[in-house]
Image (cartoon, rainbow, N blue to C red; front, side, top):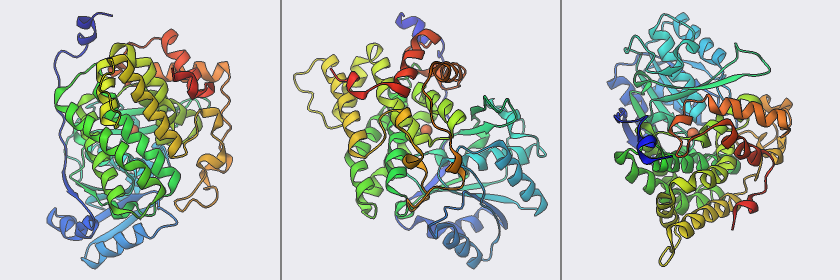
Length: 430
Ligand SMILES: [Fe+2]
């Protein structure tokens, strides 16, 4: 593939907006005054409930203390479903709310973004807005997004991801919508809200950050304003993820990951993603596994796949990850970046392939105790030929795939998917 051909699909770059943000320890306590300044009176809070922590109760209590009316929808599922969005829309309309606050990770924010767009279109199905800038009415109700994980970036991005359950139940469809109208009004990132996030989610969310940063850094969009943020987010993740994972109440580690996730999302907001995310969306669609876990497993394989078209960029990633690349060729440094990513994945205890993912790997509530209701009956990941084929086909239809560094066809992507399901990470190390 010639360089001109790689650039052809993206001749004009577009910079997408970010919301205003409050960042830092204690930021959540400003929610009530900020909501009042924005004119909120009756708020629909959307969340998964964050059961096992008192985060939702303390935030809702604080909003009420400031004289705000609050209605709570706390049934957002992981990999949020279209029916979560539409149930929230019905609750919003029934209670004549005028604003939204989402509390949680990407699932809560994404469901909330979809709900705002549906409300602005008289309750039309969220699935009608799959694609790029499908909103016909940009005037959504205002929205404050409060993050409780260092991963999503949804609080500052124009993307939201929904599972469409109206399709064939054996082949559910998970899609990404990108919409400037979906951007929140205010983002709140407070690292003290991450303290209750359990070890496995912290580690997995950290790899969502690494995917958000590394995909735009090598994307075919090649968007220069994203590159600085992307590279620094990689450095922050390499420097802080171990500490945030294994010492959960360590403020510097949590704060480092907070900034990593925030600027990584701003990198991909206009710089694009790639097939780490496409594979992740496909596996979530079929197995409902955690987005960050999926990204972590896909990341080393996709880096190896993309490396031949972007050795120099991967060599720079190696430097950001703390590798001393002095005296190395770009190829050697790129390979060292891959080794550093695998080392990080192993250091934070993430399963190495999808067929290693058992219910014990992700069936935890926020305190890491016991299976959640949702995952009690999670299917076992097969990894057989039919599974590899259906995941590959889903990947090829994903909105993130055209931005991937290397061109994707069924023949080139299928082995990558197969390796994610069944391969050994040591195969990738030379
Ligand atoms: Fe992501």
